[in-house]
Length: 210
Image (cartoon, rainbow, N blue to C red; front, side, top):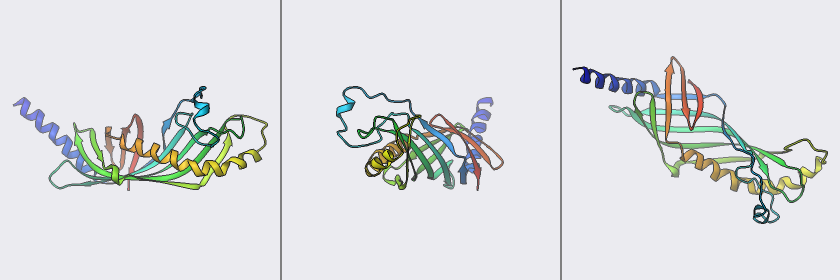
């Protein structure tokens, strides 16, 4: 009898969370990526030619403001999921034009969709469809700045901005798409009233029901 009661309680918790999740949740802006500074070695110096670009693992940071929409399928503890997020990415730029490190910052948005299923009454398993992941980059928002104090002239940034703008889409799009596709679950999901907290990819996030 104790075992039966335990199983019923567990199933009830999953059904309760599934019911509470249904709807649209707007998240607070959160830091979701912070890489360590990458120090180029001798081999790196010969990889990029004369092109100015934003390489991987170069002290980059990414913040995002996500919106999650859970649509529940009747008779189940899951359904379909739509994700959209506005983001800002800042990354170091490799350049042969100047020796002073430069940081590039750009804004954009990403959309993804798939399915969700509640597990163990505080965990949500997520399966996203790669073909439905769309990453947009607002290249007009691109801004360059020196990554550390320097007496280098500001005009030198303008000489490389066009080349960085031409390449940044090729770097940022696959990086963000890969991060989205690595999302497999939401952990430690707790809902109190119209507030939801959860952990996604080791990032703690807070949402408000719309």
